[in-house]
Length: 101
Length: 215
Image (cartoon, rainbow over all chains, first blue to last red; front, side, top):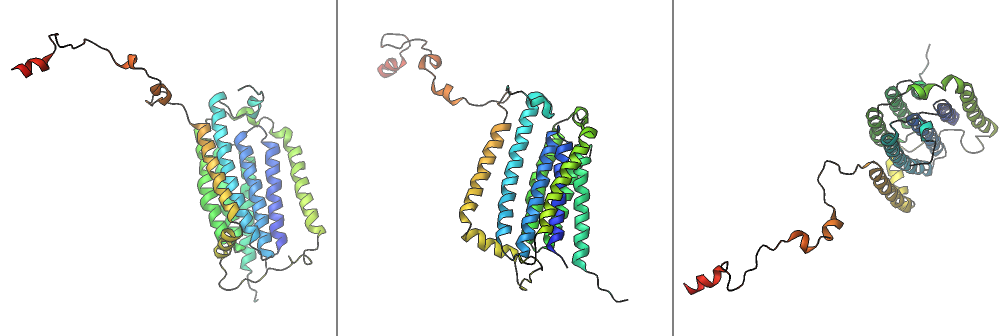
């Protein structure tokens, strides 16, 4: 039978892998965005697991809104990446280190 | 030997293993397209995991909205930008031990909380039995449209703002396309558009109306 610890371990493992990914791929802008999406997935899993085991719909409602905002944030983040790429022809974070436009 | 297979545990282990494996592929993959496709696999297997928790609507929304829209957007952007990946991967071996330490710290903190808390006392010890006709989408819909109607409207506004922001950031000005410049059109003066060639008076030879009236 499923126990909540399994889902909590799974979500912490995914969160840890995403943190590792941010520490490793620190210069690649697209990889950073993908690791943020992984972190959001881990948090959503946590919410859904708690919602099921506590028999409340509140967790699922929150996941709904987190999905909405995460989709909006991914769209805007990618639009920023595209605009930056048009300016500098690179997605290396170090090339964007000065504040001049 | 008579043993029953715990199908839920079997499926959970399968989905969890696939999720963890594809998450590692996302982080360690050199090819950005492989990384995005591994992220797609991660989301799809996690959606299977959510299906086991009887959150059917959310797992399908994850596949349709997140994988189908957001990950496809990632794929478009990755394929559109021809990236020079060599300078970005040079810090890999240098930051790997620190990265493993950070990841291990996160996981250790979370596991310490889980082991320290008495889950049974919090009511999390067992899986509550849902009624036969339990429908996750009905429960979600009842909650969303009664108690949480204001956040639903706010979510719509957030999406509208995201549309406007994304278009405003990535729209190129028309270079070889013809378009109107409305302020310039409004500022036009009569002298720029109208040229008077000759004035027609009753005596001038150009006056055709008088001669026709006389005939």
